[in-house]
Amino acid sequence: MSYFTSGLAATLIGVVTFTAACGGRTETPATDTASAVATTPTAAAAASGGWTYDQNKALEGYVVCTTCHQVSGLGTEGTYPPLAGSDIVQGDPARVVAIILHGLQGELNVGGKKYNNVMTPWGGVFDDTQIANIATYIRSQWGNSASQVTPDLVAKVRAATSSRTAAWTWPEVEKFTVQP
Ligand code: HEC
Image 1 (cartoon, protein in one colour):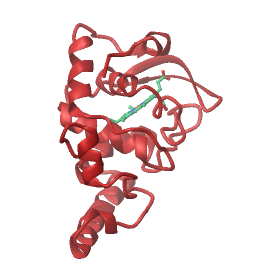
Image 2 (tube, rainbow, N blue to C red):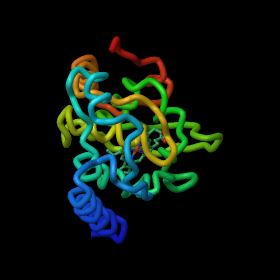
Image 3 (tube, rainbow, N blue to C red):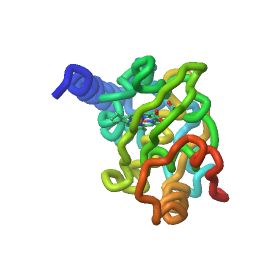
């Protein structure tokens, strides 16, 4: 396992222990890899039809993304685009889910920097709930501030794109959306 992966796992254990000791998520301190979500669990559940985002599960899933996008969400300039501060990550949630499900390739501009690389698909690895957790995580970390993504939206995007076999190009995914 890489330094980043084991570091994240150690942090995750630390977060779980700390949260348990304090008796609640609202006590969790803000760190690089785990900061408290902006909304309270109750408010978030109301806004998402009863579903509650699970940050610990999100962190378990986000480990696979750190290989390229890093624990910091900053990626590697010229090779792996940043998720931190990305307009794509904080834009239409259906697009974020579509990218995670099927991957992305070709020319891309993130934060004024150019990329032309390939992201592998994750739709066969994670179920709808876990993709919702990961998407919510990247939309609410590192100063990012965008709405929760629900398993219901992931299911809709999965159904709408079920015939897709290749990774998206940006011009394709830029036009994609589904009704929430
Ligand atoms: C194998 C390396 C790799 C892994 C693992 C990976 N990505 Fe990516 N990701 C990329 C690359 C490369 C691009 C840009 C593709 C291009 O140039 O068109 C990208 C683009 C993105 C984008 C859109 C661009 C941006 O920066 O906002 C999002 C969102 C994203 N990835 C999320 C994720 C998430 C979430 C995971 C984990 C489930 C993940 N990626 C795992 C390599 C990876």
